[in-house]
Length: 78
Image (tube, rainbow, N blue to C red; front, side, top):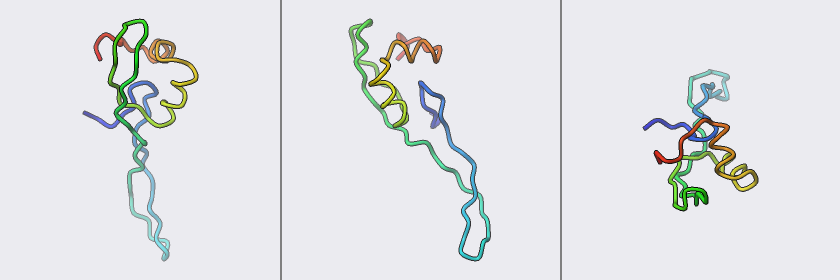
């Protein structure tokens, strides 16, 4: 499984690690992903999703069904 947020699509970012002598080496900045069990009221069951921390905060405000519809996700598969 790849490290991608199920709802927002956030993934790793390519960046440089810059040392004190200003040598640059490539590194990956991973998204802050959490496996989260979320109650889905319309389906009347729990759904396990891999979400970024930002998506969890947004989920509390907007709701699971609205975010899944916007992302084009069928929650019956989770």
